[in-house]
Amino acid sequence: MDEFTTWDILRNLLLAARWTVLLSLVSFIGGGLVGAALLFARIGSGRIGPTFVKAYVELFQGTPLLMQLFLAFFGLGLLGVDVPAWLAAGVALILWSAAFLTEIWRGCVEAIARGQWEASSSLGMGYVQQMRHVILPQALRIAVPPTVGFSVQVVKGTALTSIIGFVELSKAGTVVTNATFEPFTVYGLVALIYFCLCWPLSKSSQILERKLNVAHRNH
Amino acid sequence: MSLIEITEVKKRFGDNEVLKGINIDVAPGEVIAIIGRSGSGKSTLLRCINGLENIDEGSISVAGAQLLPDELHLKALRLKVGMIFQQFNLFPHLTAGRNVMLSQMVVKKTPKAEAEAMAKTMLERVGLGHKFDAYPDQLSGGQQQRVAIARALAMQPIALLCDEITSALDPELVSEVLAVVKELASEGMTLLMVTHEMRFARDVCSRVVFMHQGRVHEIGKPEEVFSNPKTPELQQFLGMTH
Image (tube, rainbow over all chains, first blue to last red; front, side, top):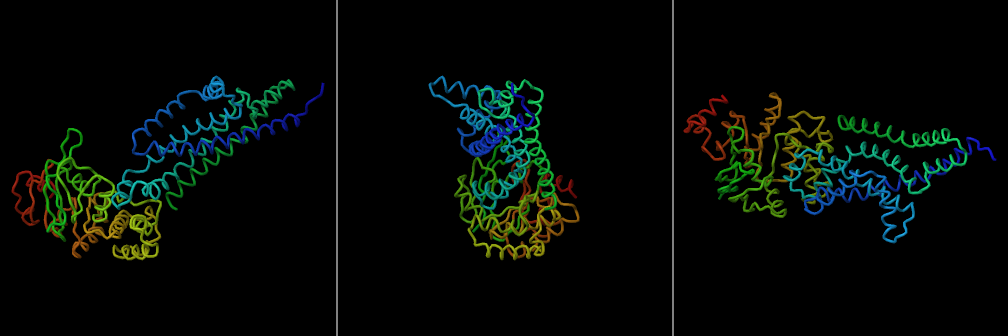
């Protein structure tokens, strides 16, 4: 039987990590776009929009991501639609990220003092103008740190997609373990790679938080 | 003819009737102080005039523009009436100059150069021409409030509503803001101000409105109202504050 060097293991894991990165990016960006659309429906003045988004957010925050992945993968399969693992993984993670991001951002918009709305109203601005020029520029600034922080959750969330057969970092770890019978080394390296992906993100979230706060105090 | 006509205005928050039928007519150039205890409805009345609160009954019109709760009518009305708040409410992400320019550019579609010139003039007028590029958090409370006044003036309103504009200020900063208001009054600006500055009300205002429990309890020239209060409530209120 062939011997596997540590480099063989690491190389295979790194190749699989590309899929983790890609899936994370797709989920985060897609989730951000859907989340932004949901945000406007949520804080708008309509009746149906806010109710729908509220229910949506509660549904996705109130069930495990794993169940959402199962439902996307097997649920659509039941309907006779053949869903490849990557598609189910992508869709489930986008919808899941959207639910969390829209809620994070709603908090940021609502954190803007009521006086800002009143002052801009009394100057004659309409809703869209207030949003565009007064509320969102301020909300964006406070939204950056928690948003970057959430991206860490997305990266770690992609690990679950291994269960429906999407070959990313975690799944590759299982495959490699089955070939090498060195679970501790393999999963140790898998964890290390996740850490290398996540740590810069959480660190930059902290730095951004400090930076934006300072900027707010002194410009 | 009156500039601002407030007729039988009633306002309820749930079961609590805050305004119980208010009638005030304001002539052009008048400076009116609205005084009264907290909870008497004076701030609510001011906020109703430019539509920050909807009224339940009655009518309000400013220079012929009727207060109706749709965005088009509200905008027309708000172009005629500026408002200044207790908490300044400057936009913290914009410099003083940008604060004054913003609404001109997005609401009136004034070209940038023109808006900038107007902003300079208005900041000059409140004595802050040199603070054009300062952010709100680099300014003192009194300076922030003066920028807020400049911002309202840049929209060229025909009347200004001032909602306790000196109440959030340190005592030594009150006078610089009142000096600006006094100057506006002498230039003929129509002013409606909710205030606790009794001496200012006595010196500068043309009429004083005393509100009590959601009604106009007494109204008249400052010398009458302050020297010769007719109702026990006003006597008590003035006794309290002097």
